Length: 197
Image 1 (cartoon, rainbow, N blue to C red):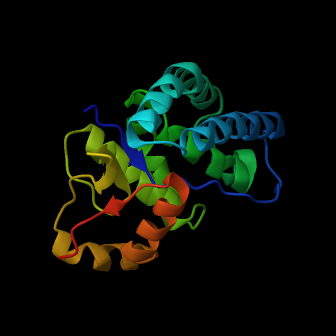
Image 2 (cartoon, rainbow, N blue to C red):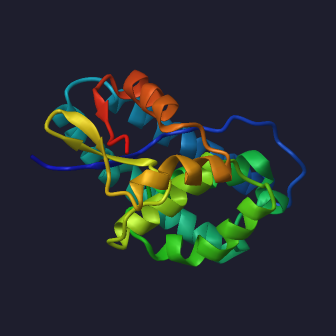
Image 3 (cartoon, rainbow, N blue to C red):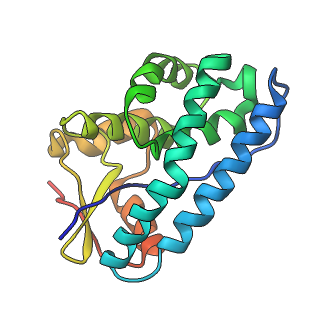
């Protein structure tokens, strides 16, 4: 069976704040709406149906969005809160999770770490980013935000030092895994499993 990595989805609603690039912020918000609407349509049905739906979205939504995000990054640099507002940055982070290749993630690694340290983004956005990049690089994730469709359910992607997972999550402000799993089961309507060391 084909596997498809999934990270916990979060859309970050927020109010517009003063920013240097309001048109880009508005464009990011529109891109996110298309992205999230498409993904929510995939969240029904069996695991196989969800995998097929997400594979289609990868081509129809994620590829064009990946190209546009790279153009935005080339144009204005990392879209931090000063440039696109808090909701614009959070939207960029959601879209970046679904990028079809890693070059932009690698370029954004340092500015994202700085933005997280400066409290410009919530812990889940940072954890999703770090875990997705690590998984794509063949490493184990740190925060347990990544799951895969396997045998009709969702299972935790390979994770570093499971014994201390809850401590790492708490340290950056994430809820316990049990809460994350419950939320994922509600979104995807599938059984979610993770080892509870």
